[in-house]
Amino acid sequence: MTKKEILETIELRQSTLKTYLNCSLMYSYIHIHKFEPEFRYAATVSGSAYHLVLQWMHEGEWDGDLESLYSKALNHYLYASSESHIPVRWKKDKQSDIINLTRNAVEILTNYREMDCNKQAIVLFSEAKFKVKVLGYEMTGTIDQVRKNPDGTVELIDFKSSAQRPNMYAVKNDLQLTLYSYAIRHGFLLVDGIWVKPNLLVDTVGIYFLRAHEVYKRKVPGKQIGDQKGDPFIRTTKDIQSLRAFRYEVRSLLSGMLKPAMHNGESIYFANTASCSFCAYKGHCVSRNEKVPVDAIDGAHALLAELNMAL
Image (cartoon, one colour):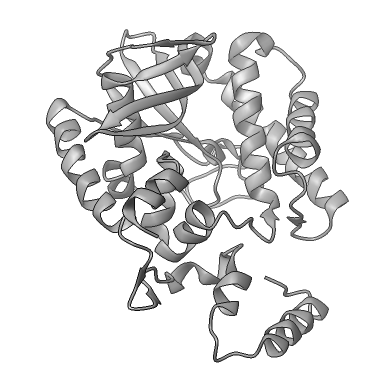
């Protein structure tokens, strides 16, 4: 494919950039070839449900029944979303996993609701779609939340429910957070069906790590049973200089993303083997190797399935 054909095929979203940085081969599968994943992780579906519940809470359901709200959101992503036809990989089995996910969600959301900073925050934008031009390319995506804190500061938040807490270095250098900051400063947000230009330079930007609201179930050094696991906020700043530097970073990134997909008959995209064990596109990746017979690939998958290790 040529650069023009790639641009006509892909959508330049925050997820496109993030996928390319994680694994260029996965980027080609998802955004160029439009392959669907072979499965969804239950934790990923649950993470989407968290976003929806938090949006509902700040839009009038603050005192709502959290178990009901989470179940409604989870059922939406399991059965009514655009990806509902893609099977879910359950950790144990569907019924027990849903019970455990719901119990964990109620704990996390209850503790989120009880924090004064969350009670008192004025949410300016929630799950807001954006569009912004960077170097002449229009980029799109969704910002989780922009809030005004009781002290008057404006904060851009990206909610995370993953098991691993992001470190400060990763947050400071997160391209996705910089894109959000750039978009709310220079781009447009969709509000009630109308594109508006906030022109905001937020005071802080960062990750809200939801699993910090989990509580210890047994004593650990320095903690008591029932204590929450930490501060959910992991903050940094994005000043005008960093937003200007972002344009140069995007230029470098796009030079790789928009290269012709093949060179001398060989793909220019390569797998990031550090992520292969968890990849929902592994079947496509293995199958691209012409040295491995298709029958052998199918047999390997069947054996893994018998051992409950299917990828």
